Image (cartoon, rainbow, N blue to C red; front, side, top):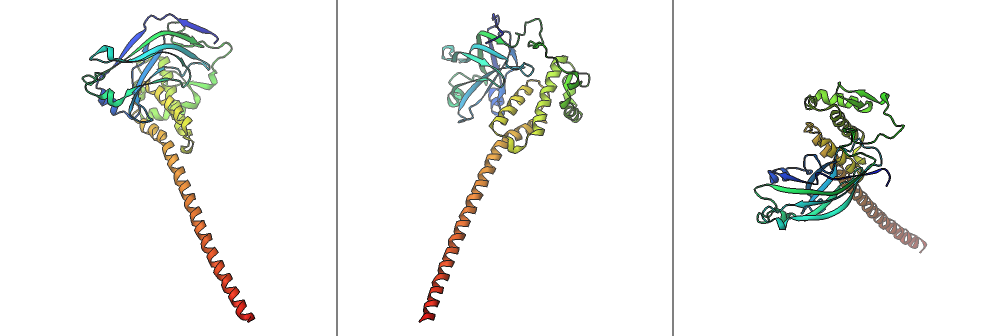
Amino acid sequence: MKNQEQKAITCKKIAWTITNFFGSFYKTDFRHYSEVFILGDCFWRLYIYKARTDWKSLVICLEAAYTSSFPKGWSILANFSITVVNQVMRKKSRTKDAELGNFHANCRLHAKFMPLSEFEDANSGYVLNDKCIVEVELFSVTFEGIQPISHPTYPYLFKQPSGVHSKDDDVIDFKDMGKIEKALASMLEDVCSRHPSLMDNNKKRSRKFTEWAFTSLGRVLHFLLNKKWKDMNDEACERLEALWEELEMSRLDLSWLEPHVKSALNMKGYMEKAMKVKRLKQDLDMRDYAVSVKGNQKKIMLFLLKEIRRRRSFSS
């Protein structure tokens, strides 16, 4: 790989403690997220959820955070491990051995840990006093196309390619809070007028953070306004989930938007059901046609028999 930069790791382990675990884990339709944290000079985030394949397994995911402004072709190569801590007996903690993960656009690494029945068992020690502890340990990290956050260009987390400059014609100063793409501005103006708390939440945030947060919001709104329900296939759902997960990190008040996102993600199921109904209707139409043809054949045969008998009687 080109333009790689390997970083010596200073902080190499972090623990995510989830309190009120069953309340937060089981009342969340999507996933339960950690705060964004710094490890190995990079922003990361964990989330925990039930495996969609069977809803009976515990899955934990590690992903790179704040990646929307990264240039094309970026990647982070990390060697890490994830542990679900056994709070009764440490040696029974469940660890996914260190693996080399290549994090890039829309890429996150999932690890299936154990059956939920074992995890939730009151005597197992993984959840104690409604508290769960997940640890991440990073052994090495290599950056490609971006700089570690301790680089002097921070908070601009990536190298600007030579000869590439943002066009002033494509962005505007949004409410004196930061530069926003023109294509997103009208949608953001509308939702900010309807939901003033969006502006209040960002008054104490840095200009760079506000630009990122409102750009993320604009991208989700643009997706929802321009995608038809029939277009919500697997790829579209994954794209919307990725946009929504990134927007959630902004800590904006999104309670008004979440139902619309859930509805859009459920459209794939509705579309599949609609296709099944359409196929069933086609099958029924074909059966009706077959019955109709069969009935007509009987009528034709009876007519021919009558005609033959009539002609025989006439000739005799």
